[in-house]
Amino acid sequence: MEYALDRFVREAHTVIAETGLVAGHLIELVTPKPNIPADLAFPTFRAAKEAGIAPPQLAQRIVEKAHAPPGSLIGSIVATGPFVNFSLDAVHLAAAVLEEIERLGTRYGSDDQGAGKTIVIDYSSPNVAKTMHVGHIRSTIIGQSLYHIFDFLGYRVIGDNHLGDWGKQFGMNIAAIVRWGKPEGDDEDAIAAIDKLYAQYSALVKEDVALREEAARWTKRLEQNDPEALARREWIAELQARAAQPNHDDEARAWSLKLEQGDPLARDLWQWMVDLTLKANQRNYNRLGVRFDYALGESFYSPMLEGLIQEAIEKGVAYRDEDGAVVVDELQPGLPTFLLQRSDSGTLYHTRDLACIVYREQEFHPVKIIYVVDARQELHFR
Image (tube, rainbow, N blue to C red):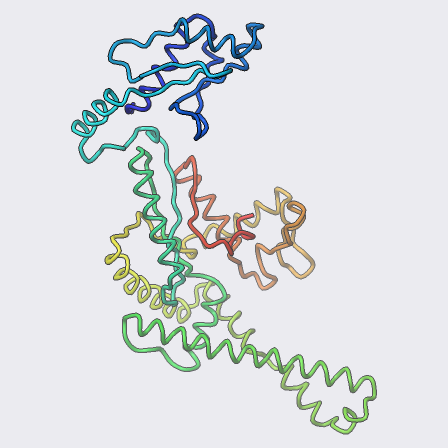
C-alpha cells in the first residue's frame, strides 16, 4: 500500500531518473541529517564516480534539469554540496494525508507489506502452578502489541502462549502434593498454595544437600585421622547412612520421569495443575484484552523429543556419553556444554524448545519467530 510519504519517495526517484544523468540502480534516497532543512536526500557520490565528475557538480546538474510534475508532493529541489535535497510541499502533503484518512478510516496506517508472510510471536508464557508476576504482564502486553502491529501490516500473525508445563519442577510439585495433600479451591489462592508446597519441598532438598556436604566433611576428617572425628566415629557413621539414603531431589526426579512416562497419578495431578492455572490466568488475560491463537505448552512437544534427540546424534551435533546422557558441546566459543537428555532419560527445556522450533517451522512456515522474553534468557537463546 502506498501512502503520501511513499509517493513522495517515488516521485523524487522518478525526477532524478528523468534527468537522464543517473542510472536507476544508482539512485539511493536517504533521510537527511537532523540539521539539514530537507525531507529526503540523494547522495551523488557513487553516480558521480561512475560519470567521472565531482559529486557537487553532478548534484547541481541534476537540480538544473529536475522538474516536479504539477500537484507533486515535492515542494523544492536544492543542491547542497554533493547532495540533492528534496523538501515536501506542506499544502499538498496535508491534502493527501487527509484524503487517505477519510478513505481508509480505521485502516489508516495499515499496510500490505506482510501479505503472504507468517510471523509467530511467543509471549506471556507463564509457568503452570505459579502465580503470574509483573514480568509476565510485561511480556504479555509487549507481545500483544506486536501482534496487533504485525497484523496491521498485513502479516498472518500466530500468537502462542508457550506454557511452562513440563520438567523437573512438576516432579517437585507432585512429590510435595503426594507428601502433604492437594490444595483446595480452583483459583489463584490454590495456585499460591501449590507454590507454598513447592517452597517447603525445596527447603527439604536444600537440607539434603547440607546433610551430604556435612557427611562429606566429617568423612574426610575421619580419613585424615582427625582426633575429633575419631572420637565421633559412631555419629559420623549414622550421618553417612542418613546421607546415603534416597533424598528428596531423587524423589522429585523420579516423579518427573514418571510424568514423562505417563504414570496415571502423575498425569492426573499435572492435568489438574494445568487446568487450574489456565483458568486463573484467563481472568487476567480477559481484563487486559489479550488473546492467543495457541497455548501449546512444553508438554505438547513431548512426543517429538525421542526423534529429535536421535536426529541430533545422527547429525553429529550431540553425542551420548558413558552415563547415557545426550550432550551438546563445542557449538561455538563462549557457549557452555548442555544436555538434551539426562542419564535417567529425562529431557530438559533445551530439548523441548528445539522441538517447538521444529514444529513451528514445519506447521506455520514463518518468516520470523519473535520471542518476548526476559533478558535473563539470553544464554538459552544463544
